[in-house]
Every structure is written in structure tokens, then in C-alpha cells.
Length: 174
Image (cartoon, rainbow, N blue to C red; front, side):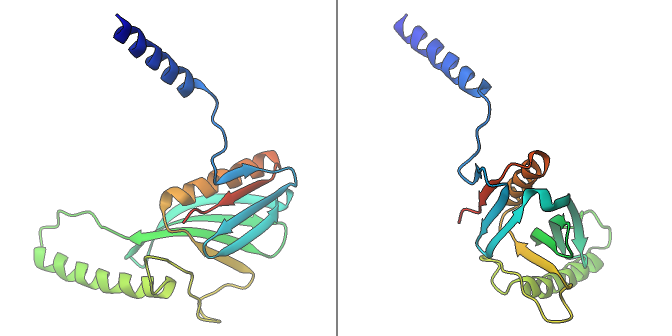
């Protein structure tokens, strides 16, 4: 009987905890200064929440070899900010021509390695690599994020800042 009461009290505690409102995580803290402050492994970025005029998140395939998820921040200035995550693109299998498929995969692998090398020679700790003036846009700031879940967290923090005007500090944990 005691065991049943203990189990019931544990279920009640877990269920009450699950219904409590979500609190900001350690990597997304609210501030009162009206600034969105990103502390990233590749640098820091600071912007006034009311300077943000547009926020987008989208996904695309780059050169047929890399899947890119990108968050763009448009400001009431000439500056554009990009945060992105990339991974090798894995096309759908099932082709009837195995030889052609293997050849295409080998070519795609080579292209991916070239594209990844342009982004970061060390994919374990990705960094943005720019070859001036060909590979960059004027007034563009770029950050690469190591994991898609972290990019999603960053987007959520930016969206809350954009919608509420309330400052936040977002930290990319190592």
C-alpha cells in the first residue's frame, strides 16, 4: 500500500511539473536592456530588439551537396546577419542505375568536401571562411552553428526578442 502511495505521488509530482509554464533555459536569459546579445563560439553579436525589422528561417540544398538551415536577421540598416547550420545532403535512394548513382554520389561527396572546406576546414569546430571579395556580400555578418537544435534555439530566442522587444542573452554552449 505504501509503495502504491509513493508511486501515485511521484506521478502527481511529474504531471504537475510537466504542466508548469516553461522557463527560459540557461542559454536564453531575459534582460531589461532591450538588447539581443548572442555569445557564440565564432564571436559575439549584439543588436537592439527594436532595430530588427524581419526575421526568417529557411532550408535549402547548396550545390547539391549540403543541406543548409539558415536564419536571417534584417535590420533597419544596411547590415544583414546570417546564422546557419549545414550538413551533407543525402539524396533519396532507389535509383535503378546503381553505377550512375555511385558515380554521382562520389562526385557529390567531392563537391561537399570542397563546399565544406570553404565554410570550415575543420568540420568538428566549424567556422565561416570568406575569400574576399568573391565569397562575401557587403554588409553581411555570418555565423555558423554546430548543431541544428542550437540554431532552432537561437531562432526561438530571436523570435521572442522580435515579438516582445524584451532583451535576451543567448549563449551557444560548447
